[in-house]
Image (cartoon, rainbow, N blue to C red; front, side, top):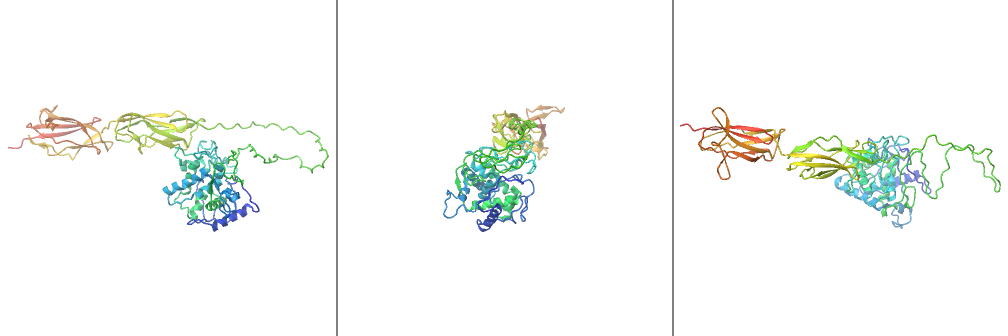
Amino acid sequence: MAAHFGRRLRRGATTTAVAAAAVAALSASQAPGVTHAVSGDSQGSQDEASDATPPPGTPATGDSPYYTDLPPLDSPNKQGTSPSGGTEGAAEAGIPATVLDAYKRAERTIASSDPGCRVPWQLLAAIGKVESGQARGGRVDANGTTLSPILGPVLNGVGFANILDTDNGAYDGDTTHDRAVGPMQFIPSTWASWGQDANGDGRKDPNNIYDAALAAGRYLCANDRDLTQAQDLERAILSYNRSREYLTTVLSWFDYYKRGTHSVPDGSGVLPGSSTPDSGSNSTVTTPPAGVTPTPPAGATPPPASGPRDKPEGPAKEPGTEPTKPSTPPSKPSPPSTPPKQPAKPVQVASIENAGTGELATMAGRDFTERVTVRVMSNAGRAMAGQNVRFEIVGPTDAAFADGAKSVVRPTGLNGSVTAPVLKPGDKTGTFTVRARVVGSTVAPVDFTAKVTAPEADKINWVNAKEMTAAPGADFEHLLEAKATHGGTAISGVAVKAELFEVGANGEETPSESGPYFKGADDKPVRTLSDLTTDADGALKLPKIHTDDQTGTFLLRLTAAGGKTLTIELKVVAPAA
């Protein structure tokens, strides 16, 4: 946190005085049920609040630089001024319409999903002001996406934290180090965990104010925080950027916005470092790359050329005198020893590929054990994180993903890969396609063939087995029940064939023409049933078995789909005389 985006001094007061006044204002004007506490005075940017230890780990912004402007000493709703008046306070209180809507929508969403957090939209506005000047004064399109990316400086350890690339340049365009991205300045690794799709466009975009505001709110609410409690509020802000000065600055704007705000048109918000609304330039809140000198705004006096001088400048000549010519002409500057670095080629999606998906095959009624996994690659041959991939089921099938959807969108992880949800087959057998494509890209999708076969059993068991004996002309009292399983799990919908055989004197088996039988629809004897299937529990209950006057030993054989059989002996014995 060594460098800041900018600091503005006010009339007759230094930033230290303004900070002190802001802290005093915080103590004097609290919203009902909300208590702020700012610990100690505002010293170095690396100091921590004495009674609020920052949470461990990398903060949301990677401790990137931020705007240190403090709010005006004039209240935004000062008596005698209108919201659209010409005072500095009134101008600073204006928040671009789309940006303001994003903050309020995030508050409503979190109030519904995490009511115990109680995050106020004014806190999101305060962080948005400090991080990006409300998305560069509201330079967003109708969907809330910034008109050009907002990038922090390269976090290469030179004046800032040293964070090596975690997203293959997918968000920040840098494949060596990370940079904070978007109006809420998330570093890519934090966005990978906390990114949101708040505007329902199927993407988690850190450059979209709706997505970024909701992500910031959820991040602040982490660890079951209640943001009406001073300790939780301070911990939340410090988790965003571990600096006491940052804490003081955010709380100052938080208090300022609670005392009154109003909506202004997009693109007309006040940029930090200026007391008037921005006029429409396309500036970005970025730090220029090394070796590049930013162009000063129109009307500004360019700074003097850097570098040592041979001699200090002498006193000005009297009017009417000729300047003394140098005795030797100045030497011609030598060309640089190395040519200027060419701009990096934009990182783009080049392909989507299979990332080790195995055979997609299962039986009806059993979930696919294999899941579709793909990887997104860039034009530099590197895996790309944060790319939204749409998985969709194509073809004549009643299969669906675990939540019943035919199409789902998932972002790629840090290794560029993403796995589809569990695939569930329906009752329909046959083949279909699972297609994976990168959302918003024209690269060819990758297709996977999935197959659903009829249910089969690898085992069929006799339930409640007991001796089956009956007299001629009577019925077997015990009703037969079997159960089909596969891998130890009951299988429904398995086709089963039941056949009756007669055992001869030499033990040979022949299809029965007499002896035990089932009754058909017309009550006539039937000795083969081919339309049996197991129920939802994998069970098969056979109809009652009758006998005629034939005595002897008979067999009932059940054959399940898949070839597994169960053979049961039936005896018809004449009663003793």
